[in-house]
Image (tube, rainbow, N blue to C red; front, side):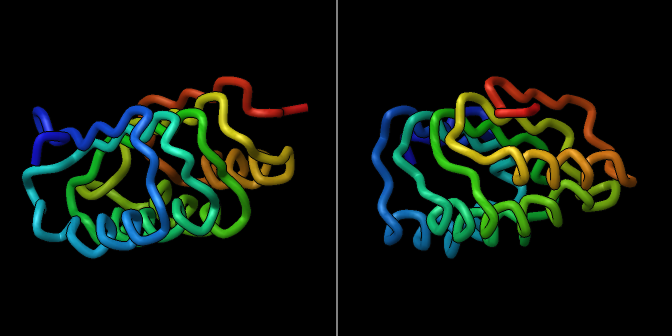
Length: 132
């Protein structure tokens, strides 16, 4: 796949539909050990689509980095993202970056509350996260 480089699935300005997201989520297990990072930048991903992808990511062992830029993050995807953030070593998430996404303050507040629990993130990036 031409979008996977150095164990990173990098999709920048690549418009994704719910069908694309479901297909990616269903096929991620085939890349076990070959994929540990995902970058989604300006892909037009809504909450349902991101939720679908996160379900696939949750099943991966050794997934380490998620970079999510200029898309949507709301309640449906938040629930699964919280589960991913709370995974234990060695299958824990090391880096989470949410940048310039459409979201709501209560969603970010809930995410931060989950992170302050027993997560083992090494890097957290929240840019324009609507925190107040």
